[in-house]
Length: 114
Image (tube, rainbow, N blue to C red; front, side, top):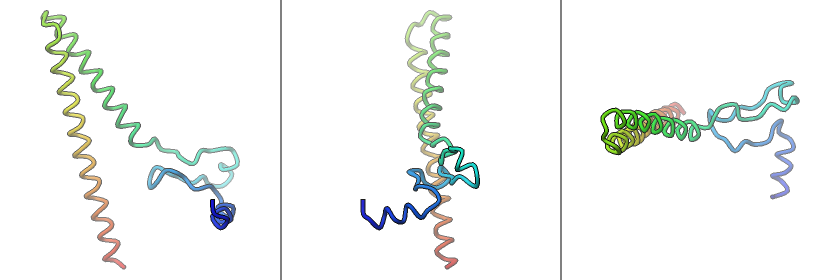
């Protein structure tokens, strides 16, 4: 680590966060002294991963239940899991695309405002 970098870090009130944007929040006032973590939001990747896993599990159980009732052993389980995976990845794609379009528009507006 460069000696000037260490000096700059010592002058700041809190250490730099590895998180960026809305994921990082600097502690304020006395809360900093009480050991409040810098990151107060759950990272988006953890949330998306849990949502995908949960959805696949629910659809797997739904397919298992239908297969058990109808006596068609793996077919509904496979179909439901594939539908869940495709639907979740399509949802992630469209949400990500919408967020990126919004951020690009904000950046363009900030550049034109200067």
